[in-house]
Amino acid sequence: MPAPARSAPAAVSKPEATRENLRKSLLDWYDRNGRNLPWRVRCGRADPYRVWLSEVMLQQTTAAAVGPYFEKFLGRWPHVGALAGAPREAVLGAWAGLGYYSRARNLHAAAQVLASEGFPRDEAGWRKLPGVGAYTAAAIAAIAFDQPANVVDGNVERVIARLRATETPLPGAKAELRARAAELATAHRPGDWAQALMDLGATVCTPKAPRCPLCPWRRACAAFATGAPESYPRRAAKLARPERFGVAFRAEHDGAIWLVRRPDKGLLGGMAGLPTTEWRAGTWSRAEALKHAPARAKWKRIGAVRHVFTHFALTLDVYAAEAEPCGEGWWGDASALPTVFKKAAEMACSIQPSLTQEPP
Image (tube, rainbow, N blue to C red; front, side, top):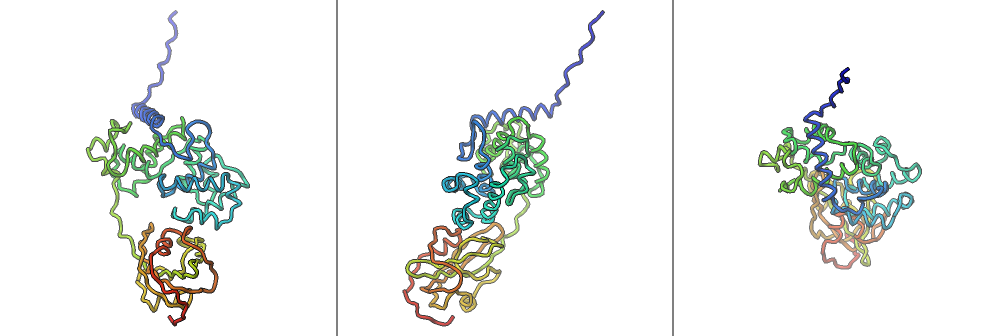
């Protein structure tokens, strides 16, 4: 009697075989070429505190800029309990210069929750914390806990857009690129996969002059095949950045500068800064500006500083005087100020040391 026929093994579809090849080649590349970053653990279990701290700092900020701040925070607050117990002003001061200051306020608030309730293991748990959006939650779940997640940042969007030569311009292509990234995502080494994609975008598939000869995906890359990979991702025309204007007052006394705490809500909320007018679309005359001065003094315009924020560009005229302001504030220096105020506070000037009063 003939033996029963054996069923043939299920065929692997060509698209899935291609995806498996892409996964393997990228992870192999990462094992050889992954970046050595101070928050990254290549062998052993990742520390959720270090992963969370680094991912919050990396929001809209480069790894090179984050490195010194990460080390400084770890030195002062080596675990989440220490960060939770720190005064908020100390955390904001340590963050000065890194930008996007709402991140520091949210970091401190989230630390208090984490110190009390522990670290979530999944994306849903992380999304409940202040300052943690979809990307950050996915990155922490994957990197700290090896949970399968679709981790898509700007680097990953660029890699996927080039791999598929996606013609839809950003930001309209975001949903399409997320879906294509999800097709590639793997349950095998999800933390390494997330970091491998980010590293590929950060070091090889760069915005300008991509280093295609070094890319493990170049043979499969549709943008590389066009001969113009740097033209992807396509981008919609940018609108001109609005201009705003204001006046900052640098009151000096005995070598110190008068500082105030900015309101919690709004740009640079809760940070130390120089007293200022509001920031508006029109310029300020001297007479208008001096109505907002923190003291009656011989104010002298010493120049202007320009600073570009995400949504607008700001020009601050800087007035300085020897003065003794009243009201809420304190005497300090420029060391812990946000960049725009540090520029204004450190502007070279020559002021006669006189407290003679004059009406604005």
